[in-house]
Image 1 (tube, one colour):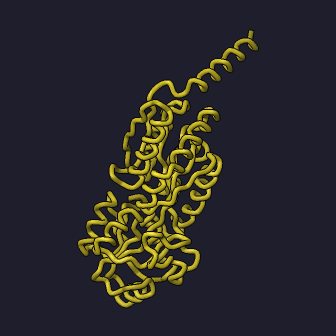
Image 2 (spheres, rainbow, N blue to C red):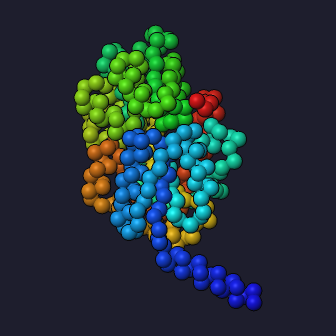
Length: 316
């Protein structure tokens, strides 16, 4: 009787996986509407919807470095019908919110990565610096004068700024904002002086002449900014800050469903029209296995925990 019951459950589980998906999917985006992670999440949702033949409904749940979205995902069944778009800031959450009961490695499972992207060190045109070294000199010459902004504590812009302060020894005051567009608006208006800005909004402002680019945080120059050096070329070796984004599900989601989602995501990101769209945003398409993305997330959790501790970063 026990064996028969177990065989019945196995058959039902296999049938459920085989029929997947039988209903609409839900994608949690723990970032604000219109932000780069939101745009990328919606691109993924559109491609998965076409590939799976079911609607993919996007819900934005911004706040607390993605932990609000993680908590919602953890409440859902581990059946592959709820996904979450995860980006680099969420890998900082365990260090920022050490009392949270969610564990990225234990409670969630990667589906796959979508992109890498990099920050651009930009200054307001009134700042008397046309290189990273000149910016450092200006900061040291007038301590307390200069400010840099971000979309909040623990975001890529903030972490890049903290690395810069630590590596250069140049004083500057961090000004966190509730949302990145607010920080960009104040930078363009001259109420902030510099920022490590995500490539998508940076390219738009640089192209319009409202901001000046000094360096990028990648290992190679951006195609859209061929004349702008990397931080390494500017004298800051190993200064690499990569934002990244992909999809995760609840731990316990059947392996076959994860593999199906991974294959469809990779296929969508590899499509020429999607690659072209991502490259225009300053993002580098990235595909691979679910396991490789799990390993990247784990490595980033360790890296940023050390930075948060060294800089004594606290939640907003």
